[in-house]
Length: 260
Image 1 (cartoon, one colour):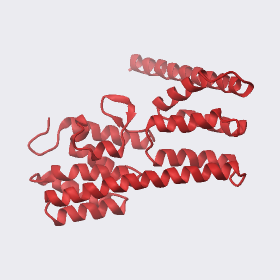
Image 2 (image 1 turned 90 degrees about the horizontal axis):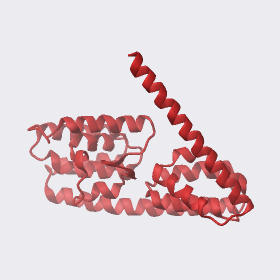
Image 3 (image 1 turned 135 degrees about the horizontal axis):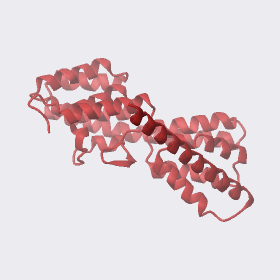
């Protein structure tokens, strides 16, 4: 529940959680659903209730701290009507324009403020933001196809491909199911060398949990073959190692709590 100032205690807590996620390089998820990564489309969709993320402060945090311009721009756009008639929120919105690393966010904030938060100006920016999100996704998809071609043609080194692949899928804010299909197709492809597949698995924990679960299921259900069996064994080891690591961390936290 927002206060008369337009900012709530829950919003302050959510903003801190988002800040911690950026600091830990962890994905921002839809409130109440840790299996769904928050996408720019969700922020730009005013018919979608984002719970505590409707508060101005979480939106301001994303608008200023998110490394990708589509996400930052969508957050700033969703925040803009909340500043109408709210002096404190309007001040925070002005700070977003000053502190954001993205020129598009700065220009959008400036345009809306110059028009005194006029609904027509906000609608104009929302439309342009939606178009920008679609175009950015198209560009990332084209870039992914290009590096895959370079890999298969022997132009790009496997380590460079894996690094760029992960960067592009993260920067493109791909849905978990899309990212899972891309990674799975690489792992199961007979034209991709095993060394590349193992390089990809080295980054397995960097993928969101829904993506990891989808990859594990797809590989487990793949027809048996020599290289698939090796992948299955590698994934079993990764899952077992991750489980042991989490149990050790949980035990450590329990000991600290008892000691305190």
